[in-house]
Length: 85
Image (cartoon, rainbow, N blue to C red; front, side, top):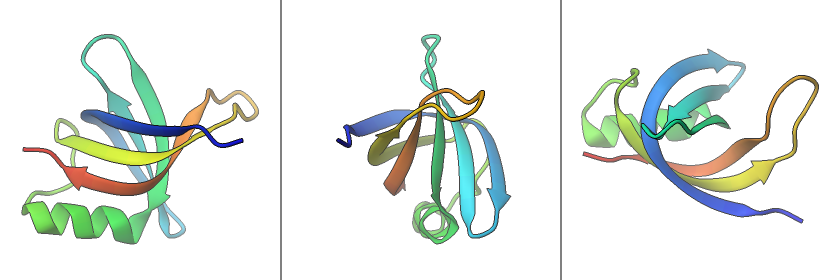
C-alpha cells in the first residue's frame, strides 16, 4: 500500500542519473528526505520558476513513500514538483 506524501523543503543535494534525479531535502528542523523523480519534471519546474536547480532552493513535491532499500532509508518517489518562492 502506497502512502502519499506532500513535502516542502530546501534542496540540500542534487544528483542526476539515467533520466532521473535524486534530491536530498532539508526541512530546516532536523528532518530530511531522499527523493527520486524523473529529470524532465525537475527541468520543467525550474524552468517555469526561472531558477537553476541548486542547493538552497525551496521546492514542494508530491509522491509516495518508498520502503528502505539496502542501507538506504525510506524515501519518496515523487510524481510532481514545483519551486516555492
